[in-house]
Length: 308
Image 1 (tube, rainbow, N blue to C red):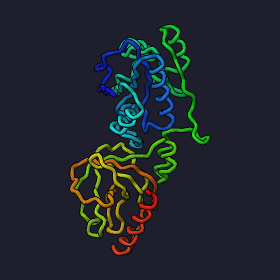
Image 2: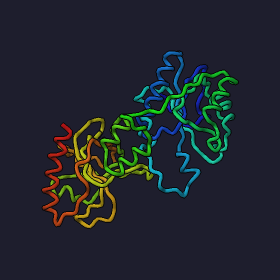
Image 3: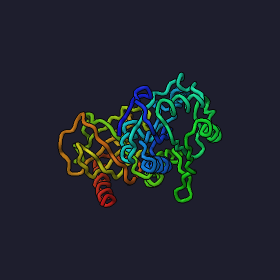
Image 4: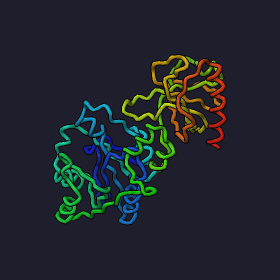
């Protein structure tokens, strides 16, 4: 997959099958759109283009709204999209100026003239352009005028529950990673750099890699202990993840720490990716470190069982 940091960088194609959107989480609904995109590309012998935006439009248009937390960082999104077989990914910087592009200008000047679109695939109830003025009806009219093919993917339903990023966020904020993974169509991931901690875990016999997440918009699930798979230097390991403020030592800062089973290498400053498989329990207060140690032994057994 070729990646471009703006529409201006894209060289254009003679025939392009295009879809547009933020695709946060690349969830099961998004995957249906992208699989159809890829299938149409093969059928029409055209290359596929996914046009997305960063920062998220809400971050630009509502800068004082600090409640928005995204399911994926742009890097995490890029990995998921490549796995689905997209040929070209355009990450257009979103700005207030760009937001003023009218629906017609967007289709005519960007999708058709710049990208070379011949087929447009969009999701259910898609809106675009200045003030989200463009609708499916507008696209139908423009497809007749400009001669491109239009295909709308109906609302994706998983077990009779409509997939939405909001439902996935709520599930994660409640610690329900099983439901979140079901709706996502893949495991929720956290990627961070290993930084130095106070080594409390090592003193208890459970050394942890403390993760720093540079993207402050990244959603972090509910506090607790999770059974996880961990990717370190292209190798996968089992482990357990802790999210919380460590109440047993009167911690004030929320920490993200992963205990990688059977791993002893020095990985400071390296990037680690964690796949959340199941939540074992919520965060708890213990009267002393001995009680915490006993509970962590139990957590490790439960995590090992869940991951087997």
